[in-house]
Length: 423
Image 1 (cartoon, helix red, strand yellow):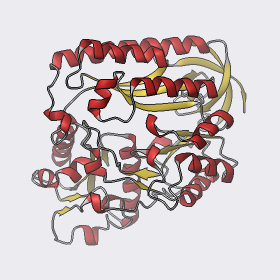
Image 2 (spheres, one colour):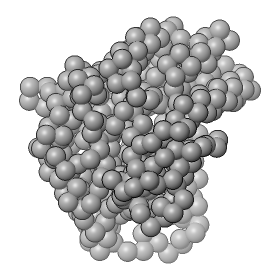
Image 3 (cartoon, rainbow, N blue to C red):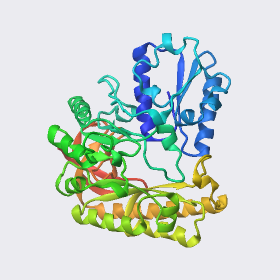
Image 4 (cartoon, rainbow, N blue to C red):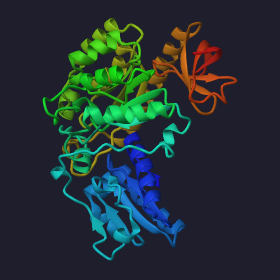
């Protein structure tokens, strides 16, 4: 498989690779495309053409968000055998070569907005996701799609409306992962804050987390992949405050630091909402850290509005910022708004990255001299509950283990520590 785009795509690529193997599919390349920006679509098309060139005798299968939004464009690329929609790609039998290449239509893409159910995608024990082969962290998809229509985003048209995996099936999956030796699960989806909205009784995300913690007592750690500031429910807030197994880290879908730009993005929070919520979270859990997605150069962004994004990094104390230079996506309202000059966008993104790096260094500095529990990952690295990455000498053979670590220093990207004892 060839994967472009988000972590959810990476998880789904692992699932497709497993299903393809179980179905007996050979001599094929599956490209899981991305449609988040025009650049992402361009990169997806380039990946398809490269796959065709590098694998002249293989079947070329294209799926993912870009293929869902514009299947004809990918089917028109010479050498492409099949284009499969985002819903169909997760079917257990979709890659059965006897039916996939039966001479029918090359495009197999349904109306994604008509999809109302989301079956849980569970990888078998022998085929853990690529991100989790060290048996440390496992990503668990609990939701797909999005009901909101941010002006810069095409993803709802690639993923459809929000669909949730029922709590009982999520719990059964996580029990299986813990039995396999995983010490941490990350709940993931397109908009996991909306989990439960389509289920009977409309339970909030906090109910799912609480049920997992209660029914899987042997799970040492749970964390969320990201969260919408407008949808942190009371149950989740209480768990953040009282449950030590809930990792003290939240990645916020912040997007900007200026309220007017946030309104033009059609986000459901203001700058003041973000400051108020993060202050409440820090009061509830003093050791919590924050990550955030921030877009530089959104249409109409002035110098003063840009400075609001710079300042919110330090006001919230965002240790892990993902900075995205704005790139218009055809078909979105933002693509029709007055655009900021590309050179200005590039300069603003650079300034935001520098400010974000300074915040990361400030966070590292506060942790030097302390000790914490690290979940050892591949390559001699460990992850603290607050998402800090630590280089740990002598941990290369301990992947998947929890160890107590003394934090002794840091560099630009991670901290440095030494093991004091296994947990």
